[in-house]
Amino acid sequence: MSRKHVAVLISGRGSNMAALIEAAKDKNYPAEIVLVVSNRPDAGGLLVAQADGIATEVVDHLKFGKDRAAFERALQAALAKHRIDIVCLAGFMRLLTADFVNQWQNRLLNIHPALLPAFKGLDTHKRALEAGVKIHGATVHFVVAEMDSGPVIAQGAVSVRDDDTEAALSLRVLGVEHRIYPLALKLVAEGRVRVMDGRCLIDGVPVPDSAQLVPAAD
Ligand code: GAR
Image (tube, rainbow, N blue to C red; front, side, top):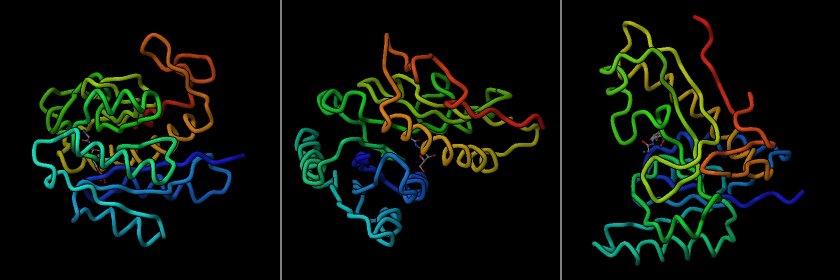
């Protein structure tokens, strides 16, 4: 089995990146993390990746000013150099243009800290608490030009507690993120995910158990 070459794009601490790297250490995992790219030179995740012997590149968006096309050309060059098959956004805090996204159609994944389509954008945990939802979670989806949209590959949920704080809730959701991202990448790398009418069919069915993590009845 040839393992897919994956690049992880980060902007910060890279804990989801680390979860993907850990999963891919298993030789039976269908993907290999061969490159980590950060748009910020000071992203902590770069050191974590380097400690695991993974190639890293910095494509600093500030160096490109307002020229998004040039920034994305530099990104593409890094991806091409490492013969990347699949790109995982993991806390990558730059919006990508439709041009870039279309070139990676159904090969570009993102993780979002909410149960999409609820709570797109930033401050998802704060807004979930304010809204009083009882179930919150995280989503891995294919990226499309519209932000935090695109076919859902996997979701994981946590119960929201009456005395929850933003910090406590975000920590529990992060635990779920670290489980569903490796799962979603595995499904994609194995070629088991097909997009039809904007929805993911996994092994030919819309939402199999394997793509859901639900809260323990606590
Ligand atoms: C994660 O919670 C991820 O879901 C979120 O940023 C965090 C990055 O943490 N992503 C977004 O908000 C994207 N809109 P990490 O660097 O430790 O993986």
